[in-house]
Image 1 (tube, one colour):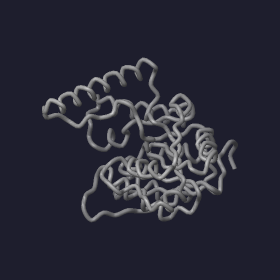
Image 2 (image 1 turned 120 degrees about the vertical axis):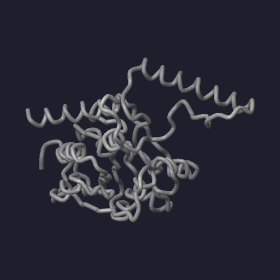
Image 3 (image 1 turned 135 degrees about the vertical axis):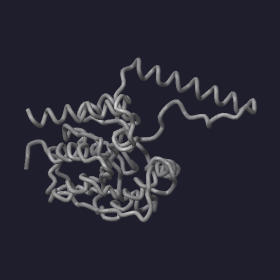
Image 4 (image 1 turned 30 degrees about the vertical axis):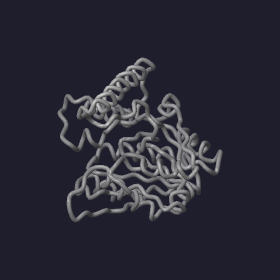
Length: 265
């Protein structure tokens, strides 16, 4: 076993791959360094990619690969949720770490932290982060302020009978799905799943489980991103044909380049 690897017979890891061969490769290479993959099952669901990423996954003996075939093209939240549910049917550990393929773990300490918080109380259903990236205090303040203005403007328009979009909360209330540790037993005992409705997988479950007395623990971004990177909307950036100058595409390519250089050095 490599130094500083996570070993836990209570933990499984689940990822969903869809047409991101290079990002998936970097994600899994880093994950193999962070966990003892001979002891921690790593389930990867290929969501009908039919590309080089599937060939790569088939070459990894330590990955428990599930191939999900679809009869008609699927995109978005429901496709991802159904893939997660497919993996959950196979998971037999107490806890399951759900990751995106654009989540890059540099240190096992982040998994240790998630497990530690999970074990503090039996009523904890999940542990994760309310933000997808780390922002400075100024960036966070501006984000909240600008969203608050939109939120209250839309409420005023609604009150005046003016047609507008639904007001969206200006602060985060859901653990984000890019790296979240779930209590698999609570999910199964409460008969909830990731593909119940067409919204971000896990959000509906959080709403339901909160009403049943379960708790969700948020780790501050400054602690979360000490040990990892997340390419925000990385799959969207690389799969949906956004322009090369798009912020998300440039961010994805920069992090991929950084990790490629690390590997070669």
